[in-house]
Amino acid sequence: FRKPWDEASDDSARLRVVIDQIAALTDPGAYALHARLLATR
Image 1 (cartoon, rainbow, N blue to C red):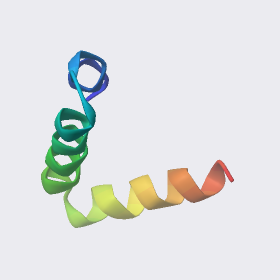
Image 2 (tube, rainbow, N blue to C red):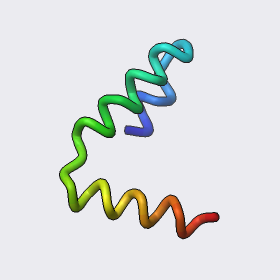
Image 3 (cartoon, one colour):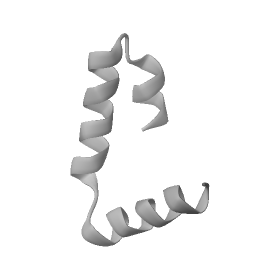
Image 4 (cartoon, helix red, strand yellow):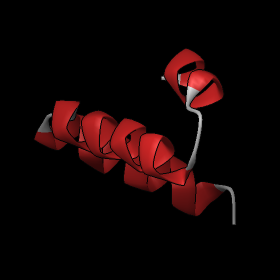
């Protein structure tokens, strides 16, 4: 999702990229993303 994020023209478009990424996650994918995000704190 890096390319769509970089190509987003404004905050509304970036929000759409985030929503699309979250919508594409399976439950295991969501848990893995959550774990990666918490590990970087």
